[in-house]
Length: 212
Image (cartoon, rainbow, N blue to C red; front, top):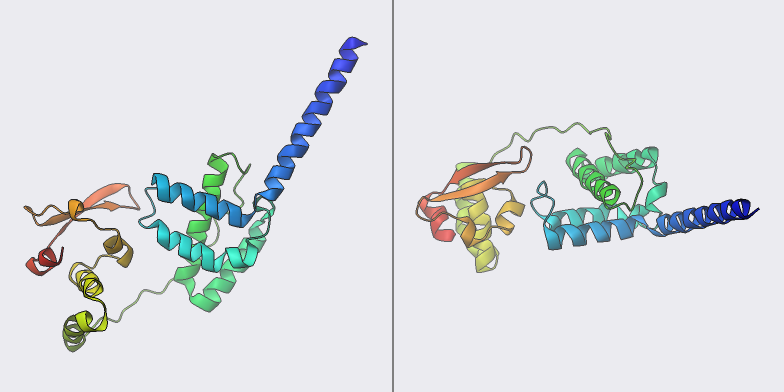
């Protein structure tokens, strides 16, 4: 009889624990997931694949949380995510849809690793076809940009855009660039390759070096 009572108590404890866990998962909304993920990435810097967490925060904050932010993260289904990303592709283009999908998938991966979710329903989402940009600035446009950048922006922002022009770095890469990242004597900037987890080196012209 005692063994039977012990079994019943154990079973009751398991049911209670399962119910509490389910309640916690339901309370963990997409907005809470995104907020926790961004806080972890921005303070610990443990996601080497994302050059600028601010870009991630802005994208998810504008494209995801206003639409599904109040939904429990564990109830998000693949068809719902695909429908949302198609809407983003239609309104903001395929590049934005693909970036949003990548950021959101990484956030859900983080939640699984942190044991806040049991699985990620967003793996292997279909990509939207991106058409490469073919237009480039003409010589006259380049001269106009170079001349007017300091006038059109605050002085530091003028240098920011000039450095993008001189190095072809992404805006996010320039935004997080610090002086200690630059090898002044060799006129080089070592840059991590976020796709292959390797490093490549960017030579600097005299004009770029003066800005840095």
